[in-house]
Every structure is written in structure tokens, then in C-alpha cells.
Image 1: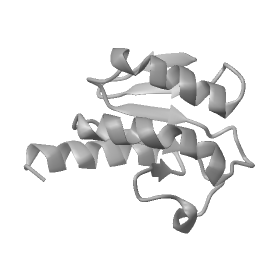
Image 2: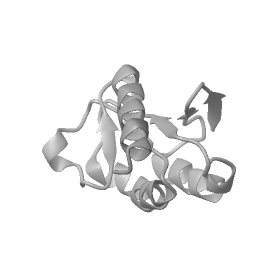
Image 3: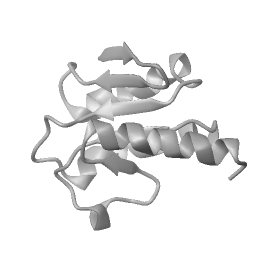
Image 4: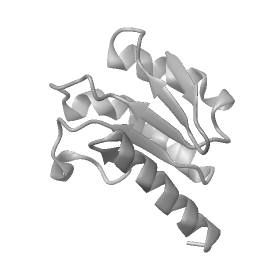
Length: 110
């Protein structure tokens, strides 16, 4: 797992192997990221299926309960196939925009 600290989020990339294993490792290490916004970069997975993302669902829910953003970057899936609990952006720039927008919403009390 490769992590890069940015100004208002941590960018996390998979260099472990399977997405299932990656989601498991990320869940185990969540405590070290729980106070930061997270972007999980899965751009390289061009044949991603919804089942591949379900391993991130619980982690996303827990992270968002702590009032932090959890965004996955991937453009392989159509928005109508993705559960509402998962936030998916097609590009890194759009993921950064989502985090900024969610930060503003939290500051306003939404």
C-alpha cells in the first residue's frame, strides 16, 4: 500500500495485489488514517466490477461516520451500479473537488 500525504487528504494506492487483500489491509490500518480524508486511487483497474468495491463499503461507512471523506477514483463503473454509500469519482481532480465540497458542507453543519 502506497500512501501520499496531501494538504487535505491522504492518497492511497494499491501495490499489494488483489483488491480484496488491499481492502483488508486498508481496513486493518484505518486507525492511522481515521482523522484524515482519504482518496483510494483505483484508476489502473479498467475492468473493475461492483463486487471488487464491496470490500471498501464498511470502511467507507465507518470513515464517513467520523466526519471525514472517503472517495474512490475509478472510471470503469457506471454511477447507477454503485451503492449510495460509496463515493466514486472518475478522476483524481474530481475526487479532490468532492472532498472540498464535503468539507464545506461539514463546516456549514450539514
